[in-house]
Length: 530
Image (cartoon, rainbow, N blue to C red; front, side, top):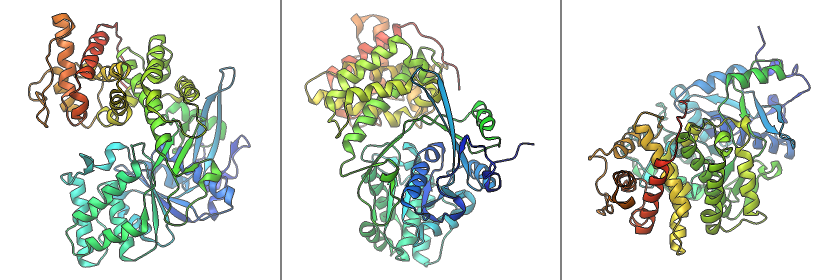
């Protein structure tokens, strides 16, 4: 039987495997991470370990917290928190490359379903100074930009917080949401006046720091307890929420990846993650107290994250989504296959050049055209293995930040964003194909989207703000044109996704209708289910 990666086998790894940059046996916990998926392990944990090594520190070990599933805790606990990062790229000649390192920054791993009390105590400990999060867009439990107080999990966490504030006794009921865990931990920290804390959100959401700060404030304000305002006031003066931008492609780990890593290392690694060589982290320089020296590990500290954020969200994430929707409909299983299709490569390049770059202010030292080229080159790396269906998930949450802001800015500048309209139309045709059962839709609004796409009269038929869609006629009045216009209008009328001023713009609506008609007439394939 092959031995498993852990502290005992660590010293017996072959020279081809890079060992932790800091001896994990010497590392103490100074940070908590909520949402310990593959991305955190391939990104923030790597930066944190390298920062400790560069600064000669051992106090920034991470207490990692899973979300709803104990799977990651079950993978990593028997391995003493150790796991490998298998980095797969291409050399200058296009040949595949692979390297492996072991990360030891994770010093504790908890599952909230069983260990909420331990996590809350860690968040309240004076030795903990930083919290990071990667819980995806839908993990923040928002409705209309504010905390969704109707969400059952949020309500359960609010009840637990209110009980603790009323009685003064620790209430360790299992946290049901990441935002609930964070808000409850900060409240416990406030009650003990345990010192300042920095909360670093690492999900790519526009103005993510301010967004998270607002959700935490909403949570504390909604608590039904006399000391709720005291907690909210303490957080306002002792906790900061810097904005960030993160970037690294981290595909799902497959059995083939595990076999490849085992051949390199000689041990089984149930916590293995896979990543591309490229990595980037931009952090607003607004910290409340001590922190890892992340800049010494390659992170960029800046007074203004917005230009980096906009470039990444609009060029990389926008084109990633575009390739996913269009690629899936055309039968491409992976993003690498999609960007290798000359039709899609031409379309996505024009999308970036004609509509995206004109809306951006380049961050210091960044050439936007060169950045475009590097993004498309990264997408072409087949080793990353991102499937089109995987990237296409949660489109209702991603479209506003990845595509619609660009459309709004182009219209404000007097230009009709035809290339963005084609990207949006690609999403619409993708949704319509899922409603037909040809493709898979993983989206919190899946039912509503598919009903609207199929023409269910209860799904749309006018916006919540009272505005109505334009005429369903189009494409010369043909049946096909009318059907295309109908699909475009029904989805544009979903106010949860499309702002009224954008959906109500006649030029944009006409452009989307035209592109839907064109894409529906295109020869299509059938994407494989994941």
